[in-house]
Picture (spheres, rainbow, N blue to C red):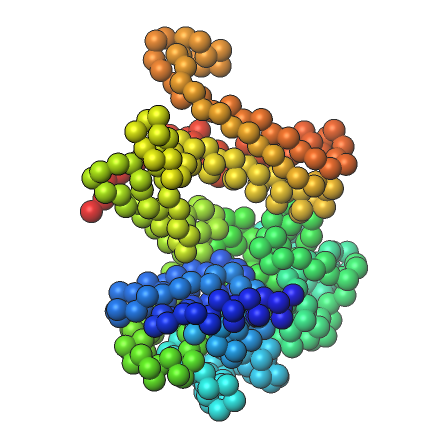
Length: 412
């Protein structure tokens, strides 16, 4: 799979001219940092930027940049030191940075620019209620209960030199069964839903506070420093010196607290990584929509005076609701390991009088918007599983937004 992805990236790179291609790993913070770097380059240079977000793990991004499929991505010093350069973890951040900067330049012709300012170390997380019940403050304390607990870790954490094997050896951790391997983004929900009892997250994740989790202190200093910094191909900086100047302005600008805030906006409040921008001309109805790295078109049907080049505004609204419901159902089913196969959601929009609305508190001649949803699930699910997934569908963030009181503000 990694080779196939790299081949596709190389094919897509063959035809590009005079643009900067920025990659990102497969988690929210990496996508956020890629967007911050991309916008900085767009603001400070005249170069177009292509975003290749959520590519994969550390090794996928490293192979992509060394092969020339991407020009830069944000890496972490401790990850480069242990996972790429195969060095045993050390604690001094300056020593780690100097080592990776020197070896990346010599071995890969890659340059580390100034660290962005925060340290995103691994965080061994437990539920706050469990931490208080068992008096857990450090990873060392975890050894007392590990034999009765289940652990869930991301795939990379289970394989890395600075990951689970070394941690378990140093702290004497022996869980009730081998840790469950899962996508990093699913570990938080699995912990909150009592699917597992301990996970390895990232110290700057916004979900730690939102889900009332506790990070246990690394009292034996196992984890190395993980300073985030852009890594760039030397040939790019030689060809475009303005890129280096633009990246230098970001050095030291993002604190741990600010990174947690940005992660929370994306993961907890479900804000878009980049603003959604809509542009249209004075003639006709066609609108060009930029949503992060995606480009969409909205229009009205011919019968309404448009050219039918894309879905209408209400179609987009219902698509957002339907896709959010479907994603929420699928995510919940994967977490529970239920045999869901497909989700189909059909939506229709209409306007009705309040007096015809049986569920409305006020029943008068006011016109209301009504969206009817029909959810169809396939797979050998039990009746109880289907009922639960139907309930979960209406808890998706877009559904909650549409059902809540919304404030739409004009900002300059």
